[in-house]
Image (cartoon, rainbow over all chains, first blue to last red):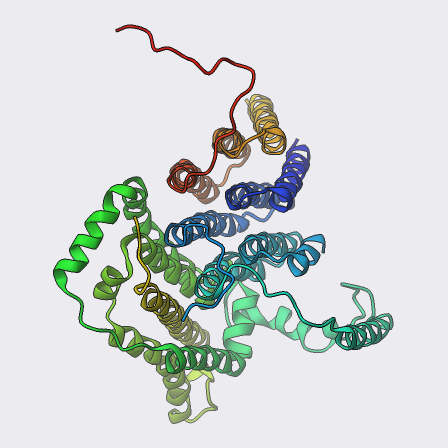
Length: 91
Length: 323
Length: 112
């Protein structure tokens, strides 16, 4: 059962990666990365149980936090620079 | 590998930052699958989170698209292909991944694995190797991190003008309604993140963790606060000179542990003289140097982030914000 | 008792993976950003909760239970907040909504 759940989550991660490639706007990609992050948390917890090493859960906690901070970071970035394309250098 | 290919080919730098985040998460998953817990920990905290943030800051300062390259770098491609194939040919001769006769498993590793428990007394062999057997290397790493922070300071440091207290407060209030939910949730999360950083720091003896990871997690809590509450408020919370003194004191702590063992008649960074019982001395020594590593890593990351973000605010104040 | 735990944990894991998969299909097939966000935001948190509950039922060590509960609480906090922040930022930056061709766009509010 655990192995089936792990495989399912791997499939979903591949789906999220496809969306990260294709997604036309920035927000699609941010959404895909966020989903990838939460699925990684689940994947690590499941892998920890499958391989019998419960220390992986610390890594899962770190991932959840880092995922959150990255999403917030991207949003703050797009807050200040409202998606304008800046080809030229700022002084 | 498909992700690496896409990263190289795409021109939109922002999308590349996203894909780099996924790449970091994927490689950390690989490390987990290979049962290397500490490495996965470090890769998670540094590669997946902080690198994305710093890259975003750099992009925000330069530009969003890559300039089209003027020439096709064929010569460089040829050199890379030749070197790569030579390297691959060289690795064909090496023993298989993880086989028992590989030289790396023969000479030093058995001694670490067998004797680490008696000599150091800690279940986590990675920490004992990092902090006791190879403590001098770790000292070099800490000094390198410190130097990187100093380099960033030397290159990017902008002397700030004294801000009006009223301007800061009005800016805070205007941002408040827009990010209300985020601010409230962050205020509840940040103490937990700091506590978790301390847990990882001191739990490094028994589980994955240690100074490097704990420092990064600590710094990321401060990043979160800075991003949502504004640069000036964060500057008031963490004074500039305070953080620089903190960075230096981490390295100082590490070095002084070594010097103390020198003064006690043994070699540099030999911990057995720090207490009456050698194993207890090892524990104490490892605790202290991990603390030094954690302090330095946290403060250097905060220094780098503040200088990057300050620079951006400096150039940004010349445009108009229509929020 | 033991088999009851195993069966219920297996059931929870099954529900969780099904939710996860449907979220993944949703993120690929939905036409617009806002609809995709809806798929991800809802199924993500619920799938995490189901799977983590299933894992809690499976093991016996106390510290592992505590850590799992911590991950669960954190995800319950973080995931909806991140979805909110994303949607808010998209609205604020005027990300275009796709017009729906099929239903009639004249929805009159009912009289109070």
